[in-house]
Length: 350
Image (tube, rainbow, N blue to C red; front, side):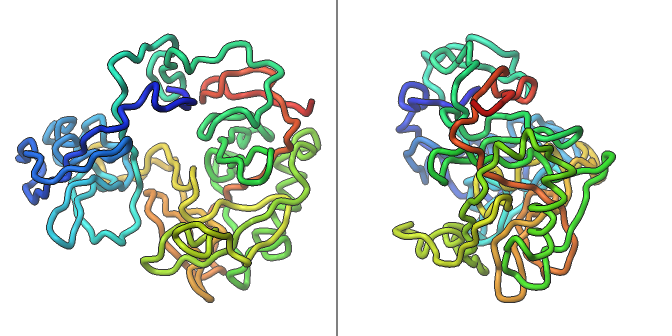
């Protein structure tokens, strides 16, 4: 499915989400009775819906088990919420815990599929959201989540994040950087402040631009982008990584301006992984790794994302993976591709 331009034409905006409390063991959960409901356009799966894909094996081999840790909307008690862990087993945690988010929507019955086969590489495209002949189209007219070919060799797949820096397009590497198939790692630095001269900032604005991205691609990057360095401590909202308060009335004053940076804690595309755990096994797939964000947790620790998609924090001298984020110029245009993983946008400067 592509990004929906006019979501009211596709999504049921008054969908009812059943958030009824249930502490029953996975495999024995009954359909919830709507004791507690929420009406909104976007929600989460409840635990019964997850169980419906679950075959009852020890580790959970249902199709909704994506090998990562993520929330459901089912309360376990007055103080705990149910979740699914990386092995597909039902779990629970306190609401401030930092797990993955899998948004759920209801599409209208009138929506029609016009292209794609429903795979990750070639998802369904919907009627009214299926562009053709994109050659010459500005990349800045496209949508978050779409794939872009950018950079060299094994590190050439990126995804669109947002458009917060004027008319340009913010993108991030689809996965942390690799060298010969192995994830590379870097210390964040000696302090918790990201800059062009701290350890990871020096790498991103030096070796990365010469060894991972040649001049053809480097010329497409804005020379200076504002990166927000707001602190997000224990139980704080991710919004504080950019804004002074959760109402998002103004941005934080702690910023830096450099060419290449990292994602903020809680930003779109942070925590995007294929799969951490192998189905029916506790073993790791090797498809993920821990990586840094640029958001401080405190004066001595920095936020990072773990390989199972949960959020964490650690001292800046630790070595973790690197996911470059950068802002492309407003005159970058698409030459081919449809934005899917199988056919990412090919781009150039107009």
